[in-house]
Image 1 (cartoon, rainbow, N blue to C red):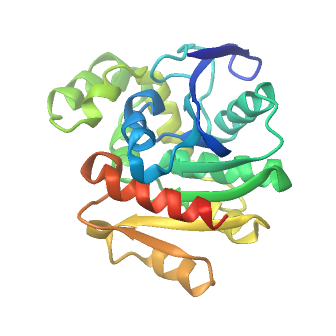
Image 2 (cartoon, one colour):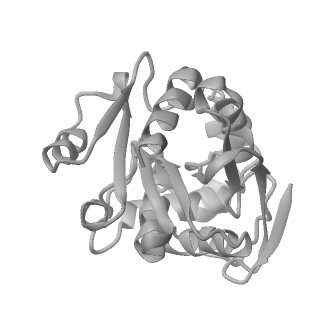
Length: 252
């Protein structure tokens, strides 16, 4: 595992650089997750095509540091990802982001411009208001969430998400959720549609129908569906997600 001290976060961020062929794919995880936990199964799947993969644990998650005095905003998490990409001296990369990571990936692509070969996002937050978990998390003040709501949330969890969420900093989750609920201007949807790089949107079959999926498709951006899966597609059907990513990055 590699690391650098992020000037943005004021802490160390860590990642796996898994060897493989072609343009490297940078993975950006969602709220309460960690790329080191969620994506090795995807990258190791033969359907992924043996591509080089950079699995970043964002500050506050997984193996990365969890500073108390960092805001964990979508914009600043995007800055951290760019720090990692620059440290690796990647002249070009593909980017994959899921859920909150999709919103971060959109901001990264907007800033790196021609250095991004293809951007693929799966069920990202396109608009202010957040997703289901973001809204639940910020229902209570940060101090209350950190002191006991976080533990209650984990106690009620039985999905694989619990494994990564229990290793996430609760203050990172709350502040990240707050940033998703607040959104940005222009919206992540507007930024996504304006990007010059090749783009693709993925949804789990069980998450459809969805207005954003339909809207993106109507704007002539390719879309793909992971069968027999919902929002947690990396756990629900990892081989199908690996196949979809390999296909999309082959077309990048």
